[in-house]
Image (cartoon, rainbow, N blue to C red; front, top):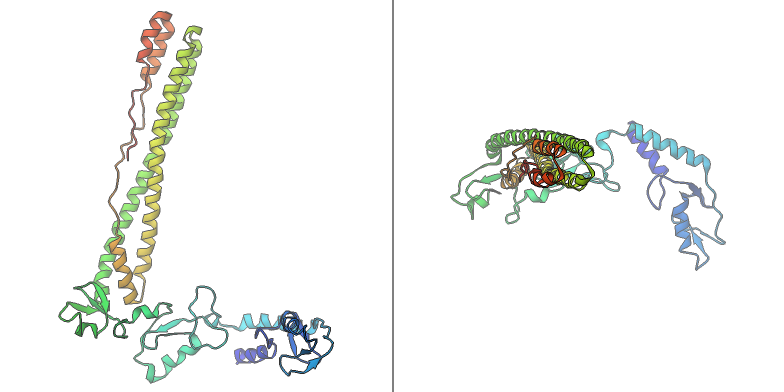
Length: 367
């Protein structure tokens, strides 16, 4: 009863032009109320004739009346808006962007909560009541509110598709089983759903297992990168300490050794960063797929389930495209030993020993 009275009051305070609650309400000399923007818009179109009329009673005014905001009426409308928000049921809220609209509502559409596969229409809570109360709708099938009702109807026979053809792996209507699908292996959508549900669970298990493996590999590579940076930095510091003790004649050699170490570090990091990027992308794909599988497992609509399941099977995961061998420790002992020897030898002998100075590690990150 409270909701009905609110509806009546709202009609009394609605703008005859935009049909919504009054905004900045003003009254014409004939006593009718409008939104200030709406009535001014109407009268702007009549400026050329210099004769202005009321959109409701058509009474004319010359010259154009001066309109002022009705503050009292504005306060009443504002209170009405708050009352309506408090009294309105969430199930009867108006449809917004992305919501399924009620096909029976006139004027402003309310949000639909169910769709009927027999009526091929969606209904809000109020207009859905006949489906629950009237025996005439007893055999109608209600599903979650959907915008894709036509996708559940056979385009050839205009009948509800509720049978799964295992031979052709597609959804069909009962007339299709007597036509082009005659003699094929067919079952009810609910029966096929039950079988595919078990397959879905196995797919989910494998997907989660692969996700865990990728996350574990990601952590291994991150640790390898951390160790690699630490090892390379330590080697650079050692080489700097040793080279500072050498005589001026081998200053040039010190720079060359530093460049060799940095080059090795850059080569290692390049492979590691490339692998990290690919691993993170695969993990993101697996998480997205796991979410899709989870959503599909809770879908009530058998038809929608089977249609979506087919596409998920086609795109079911790919095998690992690479293997990772992580060598966390690169050996710089040869560098240290050679540099220590250089410190104790003569300049002529240093030239011969310098050929031994190079990192012995191999690139450990491979795609």
